[in-house]
Image 1 (cartoon, one colour):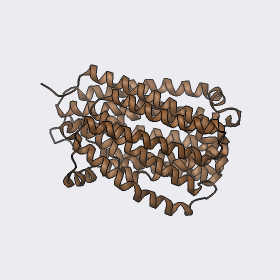
Image 2 (image 1 turned 180 degrees about the horizontal axis):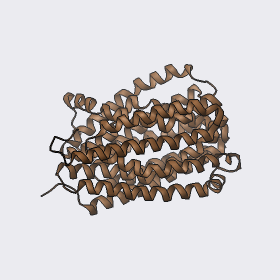
Image 3 (image 1 turned 90 degrees about the vertical axis):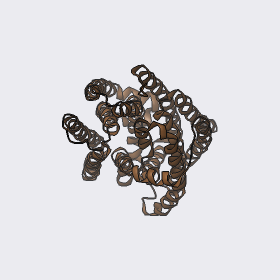
Image 4 (image 1 turned 60 degrees about the vertical axis):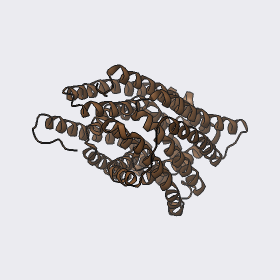
Length: 420
């Protein structure tokens, strides 16, 4: 009997993961809105900038292990426990070294835009959350997203609860809210790891660690480049224009991230699903892949257009009058949301068929163009110019990944061995 999951199971997993992502991201968005209303535009800019810089550097310990686990779930589901154990150990062990490095380089940054204490707290929170994400990725790879729905929602509720406790005390220090995020992440991660250890055998072997470290390098590069074109703009705005400007841009950026839950969930389900279909040699894989691109492109246009249309009232309702200037950036970033749908579908296809290295090349091009363009226009075009650069970056990703997908499809009709 084939071990490949059927369409019904894949569809159920997608619906469950979208539901879990919607709940967790919705709760996270509410949490950040509460924080923004408490600390104001400048404080929110400092907090968001610290998280952005920490996220930019996080690939040095995260190593792209989440994407690698999704691929393993499709290519080698029988060895997923070994892969998960290696991922947990690597991410846990590398985190303290990364935190020490982050603390050491903090004095080299603009102290007004990136306070050292905020960088430390943001780094600690991202490290603990990164360990938690290994458990989520393992359950995604097993297509057990009913567990992820519970775990993701629990983590978001813990963060929201900590934030509400601080808000009811009228706390206005941004460091306090990052501290609350860290405490919530610790509790959520302990619960997730405990559940994973009960559901999955996690054998640890030295050869598995070496193998995981070697195989995950293309995924680590992918995470690094994705962090650059997804976070570098906020860091550049903060460093060049100050916390007030980053406080204007951060709400728009965070809303687009929250609204990307559907394409993100699609990626989490499509990689193991398509990967197992490929391993079984399904002849219709190519047709399915390109239908997926067409469907997500149509959905992206609808979502991006809707966001642009409601940007101004949405920002005012959610964040309040002090953040009204963010609405112009949010309207422009509707283009990012529109392009992200087909981009995540393309990313899932390339990862599932073993073309991660080719995807990394495209991501590198997008990351370099993003930094160059942002540095060139940030002082003349300001925050809205940076938003336009983000849209251009997503378009570069779309063109490059589509070209890679077409090249892969051609190899399906070529008798030569498929590239890995």
